[in-house]
Length: 362
Image (cartoon, rainbow, N blue to C red):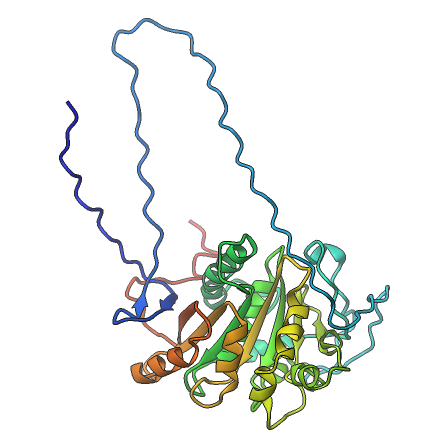
């Protein structure tokens, strides 16, 4: 006789996370934790049973996963192939002498089938990054690097689900913003881009979309030039021509461009979707990160939210108010996947100390 006694409901486990999802309703912050794996159950043979030759066990049938190949849209404007070998002129970098040997990443550094970007390659000012306490490419493992390794994993997982047809549309486009100025959104954008560029099968394009006060180029020590606003306002400007290469393999930067009093209107125009499609079409491993303006201080972020699949709102510990955060999340309603990133926290209830394990020896 089968026991019909209902099993007690499983206990919910709440785990601390660096990223939280923001949604609607009263419970507008919730942490998503993976279910705990069930312990293995050992099956013992019957007692005093005579030895029996083990029958061959049929191998499980392979699971066939169909390849998701993105449809090739009609080109908006012609793209000329990149010449080879790529010329490398000496370029000054943030007041420092040019680093010789800045080169285009080797073909193996790029995802297979990716459309090559055009543009001159420049050296990232690593000294400036180190002085600002940011991630240094090819540098040692630090607590900050470990934090962003955890943060990027959730974002990359959502982008992979998009490519597999299960995630939000344009999950490979990530909008990084904050509710108010001074909460660290550019600090998080640049560190996130540097961390993602270290992935072996990912190419990252960091877009400076803070048109009022662009700061990505000065943070990385890159020269100015035409950028996203120029490609949106002038059909003769190809967005690929505005992209800057760097000596960090897999990292590219798109400047904000020449300032305009109609930046939000250009972002809301129909041409924006076509230009942004040029940045991610015909590729399977490219991530585009938009460092946008504060949501409650300027309007471009709410317009860009309509063109991205993920939005990350940087929350400054002991600074960002709940009312400001609620208002910012409401203005980003054009994006269905909004996450919160806690910045500037000096206390961890779980006692985590990321980065301290590297170099430790018993």
